[in-house]
Length: 263
Figure 1: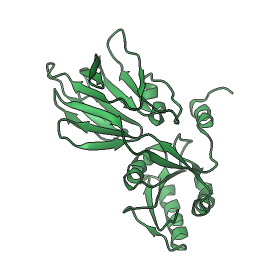
Figure 2: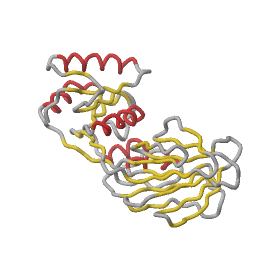
Figure 3: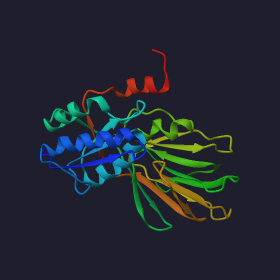
Figure 4: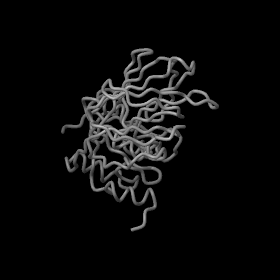
């Protein structure tokens, strides 16, 4: 792959990200490579998993590979540490890397018709701190259940180790092809998570009779309100995200370290 333009997404609150971003810009300038978020050939993320989620939107929009440079604790998505930046960039330009594909989600709300894309999860949750929301869930047009809950998560395998995990969902290998549906603090006897087909379409409808609004968010970003009766449709995006993999820790190693599992 010929690299002429590189997009950089940095954690604005970290001094290290500013310093390393400057170092990377110098390395790229020496190769006559332009730093730009417009049509990048590759995207670099400087930060942790939160920064990676923002960078993923840019990389996916451009259909460009994404390399995560970790500036914090070990994350599930980042690939190399800050000390290895120069070496990692050399390897990328030499083509010495693999591409790992990760499922992305496409979400559409009937309220405004807008479509958004996420790597980890789509969350429909209560907008009031003091009241639950009633959410009617259907799979491929067939009703599943109405959950009186704090919310409902639809996650990818990548997102199974994020909010979905803390809400009681399963850990899913990132190479699996599936969706995960997790009710959040549901006030009902049955509130188990569901593992669905990757091709299933999940619809979450805010109960129109209860008069309670909900909120929609993607990958933990600030959401927007949904009025009673609004329907959120979630499905697999037709195009995956491309993650650059060098020789960083694999998924199980990251999992052991992150969760403190005994070995």
